[in-house]
Image 1 (cartoon, rainbow, N blue to C red):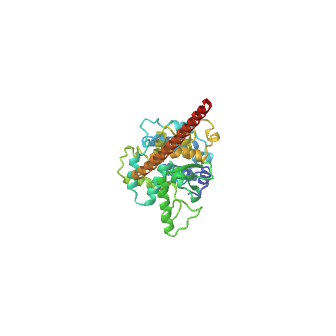
Image 2 (image 1 turned 90 degrees about the horizontal axis):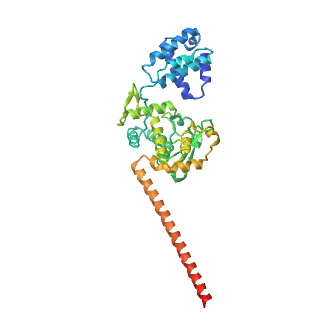
Image 3 (image 1 turned 135 degrees about the vertical axis):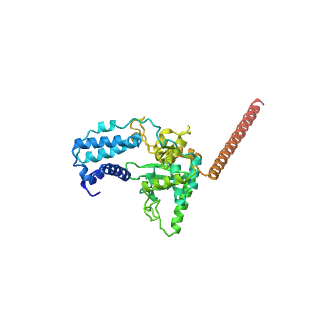
Length: 356
């Protein structure tokens, strides 16, 4: 059925593969709800009848879904029918979506202890690596799609830079902690030992069948890991939880950085690939360099480090550097004082000569 013209033109209107899959799923639910034979048949239904069908579909599902999910479903239907020249009253349909009264699900972030529990529940080393990388970089799960070795770059302090969605309008740069970078290097080394030759064009993360990961596979795996873990997640509505299995990692990153008042919030938003709603044209005119971004990121490395031993190592290294700086500053001060004393002695000596 995906080769029908109604679906072909519908798919051409969507650039993101993830959105295509999600929108097609919503359209399929609508078709099956009314037991319609195929998608082309949907476009032949008389508009007045179709309007009533959509309204009844929304009202039937309003008690089962949150308002956000209903809006998403309507967006898929609106695009499908609009692309197939079917004119309907979408404003009226959207007004039927009830106001969100129930507390929204998925609003909480994972704590650092939660992330440790997730890692304990991983059945493969690759899943562990993915959790370390997402939690330390704040990327969305779609970052795995088409991420290649050439999109990674070594940075100071043992960190790595990631260019996400390279060469697209969604391209942005973020970073990995030394801890996450080490885990990733070990994963890549394991692949080399199995005989795989990694080149700049090689995918960074691959499935067991050596195919590139996609957002759907990764989301499904993270959901399974969260479900099998000992993390206490409260079910808020049907199969929804207060902590989202995948996005909870991104929220951990966001929350961790923003709790540090010494970090530039505009830089944090750029690391998250957020567009600023409060500052018009910020995404066009505010262009921090990779160095600018990393200067802010490195201040949060300790807070983003997951393993207790790694956090302790990082803290000891920071304290060592602090002590060295202090010793250097003390040495400089002593030299300055010795220089001052020498100048005073020479000045006093010259005065004695003049008086004699």
